[in-house]
Length: 554
Image (cartoon, rainbow, N blue to C red; front, side):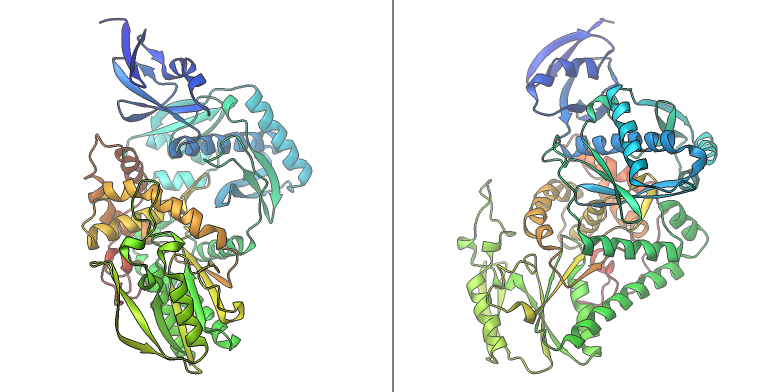
């Protein structure tokens, strides 16, 4: 066998000694990249940089400015933070340090232990983290049997992981260590601490924040901007999971395996229905709201939520009328295009803003209007005699991507509008140190729905997801704090149900496609869950909008 391998990088062929690491090769090319190389694709398969090159191959380097690279950066920072915490405060004084959820560019973490967390102690932990980074310590990886992993986590008092691994079907587990501190992570790690230079740490609420750069600016740590309404909604959701005693995947699997799924579904659905009822009651008590503006990111369940809110509004003596902003699309040939020359359905200017405001103002002034209907086949707006006039109890429930943006409804007085932000803010975590990104839950929802209703493959949904996310970041997230109320549509049991629908279509993704890496990641993620049937899910559940069987026209 030759002791030289030929490697294709950026269209050129290079020769290297066999068994050279990807890290060594990356040093020759780092100058060509604006940001740090943190992973590599070898023959289209994602690899950590400590891996060696054994045969001829193609390599594409991944930087911290890419999604996979940014996630790896975040993982490495979490392990550094935990190592520093236990070293500074002492494992004997710590009951638990858990990564709960993201707030903007930060991860909110919870802490419990015998030592009180103060600014001085947080600053000391930060200094420890900086020392670990300065030392450029390698992240080590070893594979052990699943039974050994369960025993290891018990010894480390990482009980969430111990419970999680009792349901693992694989025989091995990859354990990462940093300077003697061991942990398990869902996903790859950086080669060493030296490239993880950008972070901050601060006390916040009852815990603390690990502040990190975002993917767009991977070397810039922006100051934390509080989002009190979002944080309150996330805290409320955490209280729900604690009340139901289902804080992570292991406890969900426990409930399913012990035959408690039906009860869990009923309690979760009851909590959501109570929240919707409370929102309706709040609207009814204001007396001056005529326009309920609902918006949220893709696959949040906006349509089902609008129907359920309308029912509750009726129960509180009001007469709701649903209006989809999509019916105010401009005609196809007048629609703006994106940078690729495709019609941009998510642009504010894809909406006939002038006509929308004229109609809404006329309704507010007591006039009768003919509501439009947009024909997506012909690409034109139609009128079918759907006349509407608002009486004292009448109220409009308006749902669409731009509902929270006052530029859409500029002519309407703020006091006439009641704004609702809805998103599937996943309450569940894999374990204490591995959180489930909200975007993963929504992507799985959309994948399942689009396969069922549009015949779209999982590969197509994954391919379009970055574009969907860009639209959300531009048109929805900037307005989420300027609302009257937030609603979390995530269901604590839903990923166990979605598993049975998502796995078959994810296995259908072409292994040679660029979407396969994401499909493989999602399949590994779903493998943590025991699958659950959907028969016990009520027909008015938000989940039914995606898996089918809804009693609403969705």
